[in-house]
Length: 69
Image 1 (tube, one colour):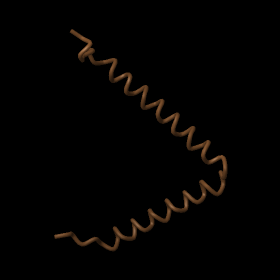
Image 2 (cartoon, one colour; image 1 turned 180 degrees about the horizontal axis):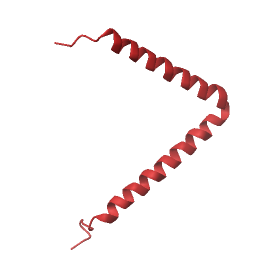
Image 3 (tube, one colour; image 1 turned 90 degrees about the vertical axis):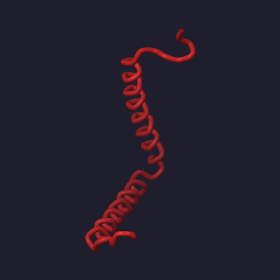
């Protein structure tokens, strides 16, 4: 059976959706054409941090694979 969702949970979910919609509207409204540049910069910075983190993890492990005999 599906558990019954409380009124508090529904209210918080609705409030979260409204806040997210308001933030999205404000982002596109105030940044306009610059929004794509901001999103691109955010993506590049995030990917570079993730790449640095993954390279550190790989540096800690001994090499393995078909090229290693």
